[in-house]
Image 1 (cartoon, rainbow, N blue to C red):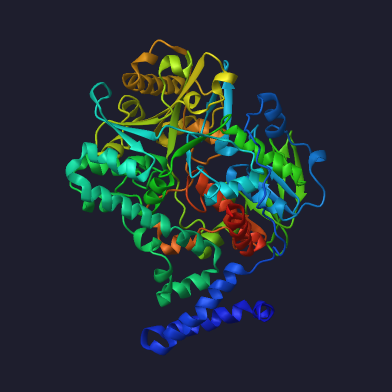
Image 2 (cartoon, helix red, strand yellow; image 1 turned 60 degrees about the vertical axis):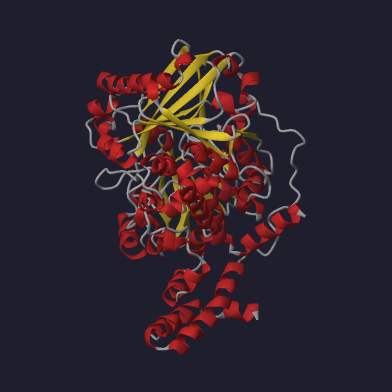
Length: 638
């Protein structure tokens, strides 16, 4: 039966559905018939695929004890520079970009027996897992904490383990993984955000005893979003015409409530639960993990963000927050090592300038610019982890971009996201001496989050430098249990806040590290005021500074190749989570042989990019790999 179904011409089935769905509004029998047809078709498309062999493992070689890898050993793997002689022969796939979205695709394809080349424009692989060393200190740049790493029963951890051969170790953070503070730093009101659901509710009830009903309902809604999150994944792997038919028949609404929830803003939901502004803000505080700009520079604050995304993020940490043992670069090291063990290669300082197309407009390779020369490298499958803007506006001909914008929606639904600024501080003294927590601190000027962000983003650069309304303060040295062994007597602090690219845009054509006195002065003004605010939360650190540096949106554009320094990819506003846009932003493109991965395709953050890698792998190998992954996960549990 499966063989006969596979031989059906899908285009004819699509035509059939276009006729049948026209009957739905006035023919009950036709409606029932379509539903009965759709159910086996959905099952077929989820189980079909070209990955006939088992590609995942239920018996990974987990080490008895996780140990960090030395910097020298790590650098040999994640800083392997491009040379044509290093490129494997007879490639099956080329991945542009080495963020976790790209690396996870490469590892999965490698498990399926494919020979994969990953090309990274920066001088080290890893994307937002990038770390850097200065003056004897190590700083993370994008991975500050990750949820769902509590056990191998976590789907995201199990898939990450498949991509790294189970070699990544994790350090649990404080049970109060986030501290939320409102008001001036000297006299602020602080609220611990607890990992365990019951502890989360108990802690909030201590501060808001009259709000028990609101707290219970909030947790219930967050759990409901999490349970229905597979709907977001489903519409990206099923054929578009199947998604349309499911939507028209109402069957999609029965299968998942995700898109019913995605229509509502975070502020709308929390405002219905309680009139208490402080509690509303606590329910909403984590918007900084996805906050981005809209056309009016209003930002994806709680009033503009989809509660479906917000609920997913809150749920993500409900079982604790974790930090990679040895720092985020360990993630890169272990995935790259596994890719190369499978016969692939990851090369850096390899800037892809063009995706090569044949006469039929099929992607057949890439052009790499290196040392004044161009090298064409060919493979039948091209995967871009470079982001939608870079892929369609810089790597493909304009005619392809226009076609995708008008017909397939990849560009139609894309808007640039907001950027951010970071302050990196090296501190004299270890975490114990300095009393540093393994919790993050979110500091806000007030509990009016949307208003404060809108006002800040509407300011000039000079005004904004003196009126930063929110800070994220993190101490990687307190989170990583291997830190003291690697950097005895030292600590690190990383502070992040949101920023407009436009504040720094006039220096974008200047050479990095040579952008001039005005640029440096503006950065220093931001950095000085941000550090002063942080010291009001942690006054014991004021006289311990040994190293100090500030990054701007231009820094992120240079190192991450992010078009507008947008740290979370394209905007995460309400429109992105509508069914139409969620269906259009998918891995398989209208360019034959070209696929997309990364946080632009699913959602932002480490786990969003990781799951986009799984979705992209499904698009290439077939949805059957999902069944294999789940079966191996069940087998490992047993």
